[in-house]
Image (cartoon, rainbow, N blue to C red):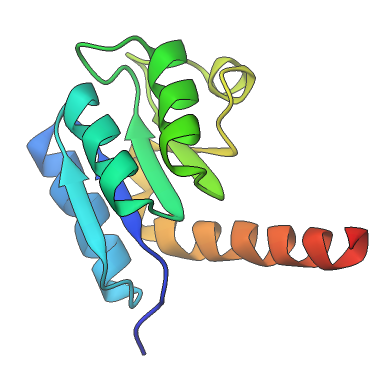
Amino acid sequence: MAVQAGVLIAVEDEWLRSSAVQAMTEAGYDEIDEASEGFDALCLATLKKPAIVVLDLPTPPLDALSIVRRVRRACGASCIAVLIGPDGPDALTALALGADLCLHRGDLKHLASTLRAVGRDQTLAAAASG
């Protein structure tokens, strides 16, 4: 069953990007756009307004702080997930930058299920508040 939520995968590394796309496709997401650098990610976020954005920080040529804030402003994504690893920001830094969740780069098989759980939590929180 297809999941009706647009997804933007903005990851510079081609292998990592295709792995993330594959994980989301296998989980039923069918509206997936890809970007390999920050400016493309911003353009796609503005045009497509995805509900979910997966970022690998930094996303050259933009710095981590800039890309998270600008993507959120451009599309109002309900979830921005940041991939973390030894050569990028740590989880606390990514969350402080505005990410909703952090996932280790080596754990992409759990990407879709983690994003679904975050979506359920956000739906429950919205229902409780209003």
